[in-house]
Length: 65
Ligand code: SF4
Image (cartoon, rainbow, N blue to C red; front, top):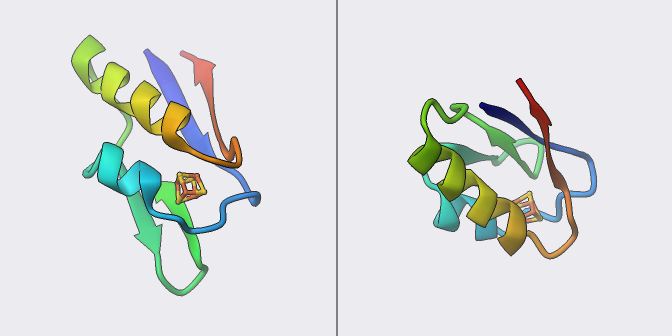
């Protein structure tokens, strides 16, 4: 299963939190998104992939785990 992460390029646009709510959340204090829950099955992973694709600044990456 992929493990997702958000890096410092995040511009807090909320695209990922709208695309995959429950997996990506906004840290209002830091002004950037973070992965609140990692996907546990293929459909959850696909949702997170869609969030990755929706990110306008490519701040979301993943490692295969
Ligand atoms: S889509 Fe990208 S830039 Fe927008 S909040 Fe998520 S990680 Fe940040």
